Length: 274
Length: 280
Image (cartoon, rainbow over all chains, first blue to last red; front, side, top):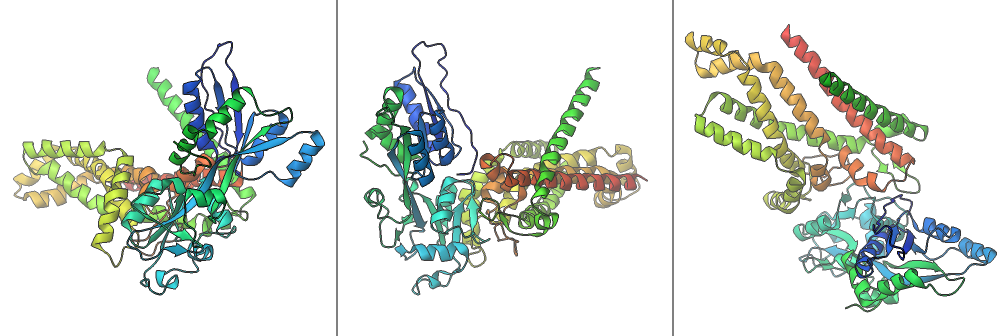
């Protein structure tokens, strides 16, 4: 999460004596869902002011050490160096899993393929395999059309990290500006393949099983589905569990209403939804 | 006073943009060699071992612009001649109205149309050749919709600017309309026509939304008009929002801006020279 997006969602209710400000910093993968929660939370609690920045997981945890944030969003687990620093400073941060980022592999409904392996995905996106019959001999010898998101998206970063192991995408991989465009192309093109956030799966495309594991909420929550990861919110619990606005906001995020919102930005809910 | 002030302000703003663009852009060469930047086709700005070659992106811009010009100049030219010299008042007004409406279509609407319909039609029409519906042809078709009204309006104005007595003299001497058109009107209007082509071309090179949405997004050197490309403007638009401030990637994107500016500058200056040559 090297990117540097600094966007403030702020709620202008200046002057309210009891107005309370909640500061959220960290991962830009968690950012869109945190923003949704902030908007919804504000509707219930018009006095609350929430500011959100999405400048990367490490930035968020650093800010938690400095006391500059109430919540640190993170798309990764805490690092050992950070645990050491916590010990040294006598601090104790606790994580809440707030959602899962699961990547679905989608193809056209007419393509006769049901399963794909992570290795095959690697081969397709690195350009080592270029026709469908190389994946399965019963498929036609037609060019595979691999689709990707822009290299600015969090989904792209995660895909490159976990499926490509840092290897570069082949030049012919098409980088599209939105998930909508990807889904649209997969619907139109019988030989296209794309990866999208699981919450964006529609009836119009076929989501493949990966390593024979179906992309379902249950499989993502249990960790069985290979291309998914939990998303966290870390809070400073040195003096006990979070209270006040921070605790209230977290309770809202994990509530059935908060968890339903997760789907609309393409993620998978971690707990029960409405 | 006011006019001078406005002109001065515009100049200050223009040079300000030039200055900031270039001063940020050139800083990329502290990290990347000129050679890699201009001659490498590999654009991988977000990886551990990042690469910043713009040749493939540049070829995308040139391919899309070239094909758009091939489609839109002849069509625009013919329409302009028709509007200027043929057709009665009613058809003229109607066509003029149509072109004005077309010119007002937002590019994001054209992009969506290309994404949803043209892409599908191209794949249905040439099932053997078109492996992806988002390609140079799709982008060029939609860009032509933007460019044609531009060319029509400006070329028509150029033709109309030719003094009426020249045209009437030609006709009076017994020349028919066709030879009057090709021997008198077009030669007389050529500097205005050239001007129209320059303005139109600069507009196409700079257009961003259409190519971001439907040019295909593949950072490769195209072999045919059915290949997907990622033009320079698409790279800036797609990546600027998430780029780390003052990183190599950030400076590289600014340098791409400088390259776009230079292309348009070279183009304009050459055309101005040509025009001057014509007047002599």
